[in-house]
Amino acid sequence: MADPRARLRALCLALPEAYEEQTWGTPTFRVRKKIFVTVGDHLDRPSASMKADRLECAALLAQGDPFFYPPYVGSKGWIGVDLSSGALDWDELGELVVESYRLIAPRRLSAGLG
Image 1 (cartoon, rainbow, N blue to C red):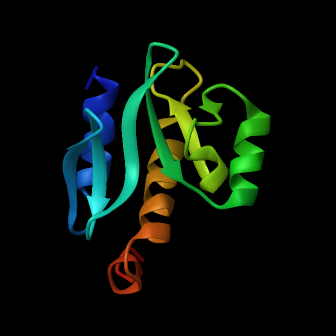
Image 2: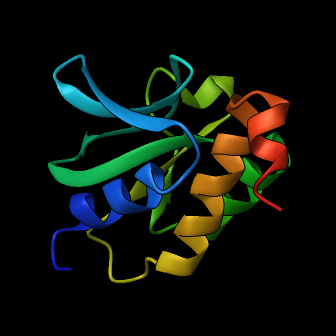
């Protein structure tokens, strides 16, 4: 799958009750009307932002590429990811998507992830 947005979409939609909704002109992925991943462009590159533990956000930002501090939501515990970066580890991104879902979804749904 060459398109990183399509690959991210597949990761998000594989989660229980997850769905896609256009918001602010870009795709967002939600569970029970709450956003757990947003997709957009950062510096004209495809990117995504997701909720993360604040300590994890700090560690990822210290790592640098492909992670960045996303405008508007970075201060609320979200991390940005450059989807076109050669440094992107898709397994790690999958873990971040699941963690974001866990932080946003009702406990009953997130508990079912194992």
